[in-house]
Amino acid sequence: MRLKIEMQANVHNRGSSKLKRGMMIWHLFTDIENQFVEMIDVFPPARVTEKAEKNMVAVIKVPELNPGESFSPTVELRIDTITRDWLMEPQTTTEERVAKTRGIYCSMQKYWEINDPLVQELSQRAAERTGDNESYARLVFQMVRNSMKLKTHLDERIGAARAVREKEGDCDEHADLFIALLRAVRIPARRIVGHYYRDGPEPEPHAWCEMFLERNGWIPVDPALGNFGTMSENYFSRIREGLVSERPTIHLKWSGIASEAPWVEEEVRMTILKNSKF
Image (tube, rainbow, N blue to C red; front, side):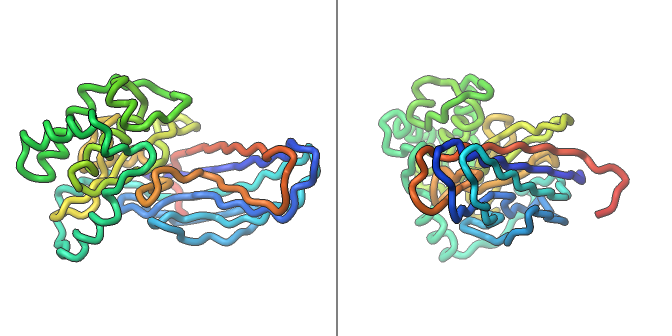
């Protein structure tokens, strides 16, 4: 599927002092095998660079903003997405890579409380019923889907420890609980934040996971929507989170002390491009 993705950020100085020497770090997309970015247009022109975990960001200089003034940069991406089944494409992974990945992506983080008693109990119960990492992950995948009531557009991300007790949550809680249950038994896992396209101009914000299997490398898993090892062309992968459990879409820095933090918001629109060339 060929998509045009339009983003606009709005930075508003709602304080009583001037904002000086501002810099904005704007997450645009992350590198994943079923997504091919063909064009990046940033206005005003800005440097686009790769940060940790293959996250591509625009580094934008923010002009001085007097009280009440706003700044609204834009980005247009044109991408191709495909449906892909990672489990159909085995690959060779070295013992060194496996050990390194496990050392990086199995630690406890905010929202991934792997030492929580209920998370530990659930992981041990699943481990007793399975004999390898993939079968364990598939069982945990079903346990999360069966035990969690899916809600939409919740205001607060509550993390795995609360999710396993409250047994409800949106895509964030499904992803966080799955990641915690994998990391609890030393299976590397991380989070992807992006959007899911459902034919309308305003895509649905979404979160899912990646897990590491020795014979497949990193594969996508979406507990909320029920996809294991596959992704359809409707996914737009934006931010990868594994070294840390959360990365803001927009990070704003400025010189001095503002009387009140600037207000920052973002709008995203997606359109299918039919019969067009980049």
